[in-house]
Length: 423
Image (cartoon, rainbow, N blue to C red; front, side):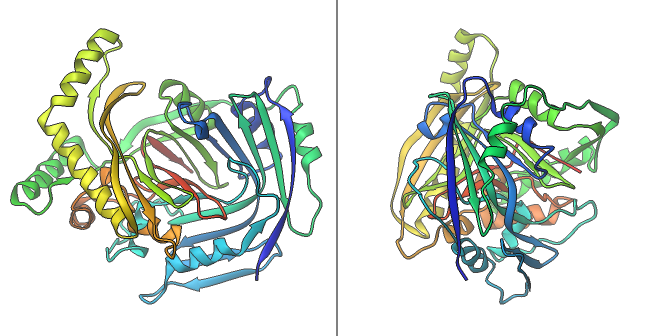
């Protein structure tokens, strides 16, 4: 069955509102809302921020069960076994939706959500066992939202969209809420000490073990991780607000799922697909900034000449080329080892692109490039097997991807890094 959503829209001036203020005005009226921002305005796409509210359909994967819900109230479940085509089911879910008046050059519809690192077991022949300390959140969660608010920071205007299925649009309600002078804010307080399920000594031992595998030639590089946790009370949106100030990044996000939230400030795209062109932007090679422009310029030159940092970067560029070649042609490195300045660090960044095969779905490309090599290693398959063997807890959301995919096959996700999950 195809669900045709009627699209209603309204353009308003946005010179007196911010993405954060819009989100704060809407979240109590519409629980489970999302916020996506960017601090990188060099590309036209990044001059927009998005707020999504009122989910009307969703697909989740949790405990080896796929659950799909639709705008007419129907729900289906599928138990996952060795024969289940999870990628195909996600593709089929996305294809069930279409909207009218698809004439804008920015995001106005689609599926917004995330896939955890552990979801790789549905895409590749990788065993991920459930370990003690698992966070008990879905491996994958995407939703279609009735309302999307797109704020254009360059023109100081906003577009309110209402995608409806057999119901009235709520444009006037959203527009009225945006004029409210005040909104509720809540406190935030840390409670107790920071905790980790791995001591510093144990993590150093893990690093030494991983280095031995590199020396033996099992992998060229591998990226072990360690989780930290902290009890709190109050509103974690305050943490997001501080994070976007302290560490502004190309991908800023706050996704509220009710009993848990994922938010962060990520510098790196997992994958971008636009009009059939796929892109991976490997970031590898890092020096810490000093706060002094002259000293940073010297460090940038040292970074560009550093043998270890460049070796790491070249491996990940080659990995990106190989990943895109699985489902594409004309794969090339458009930008190579470019020095880029971020708020606290200097990175080496490349841009690898390819043309997606016309008969290959975007979701297939996503699956075959997931997860990022920068969060796993190279060769990726061997690195993931070793990480599964040695890391004492599941990564869950960490190292996964978060963002949107529209109904036309376009896709833009950040790697979930420098990020939090709250429950």
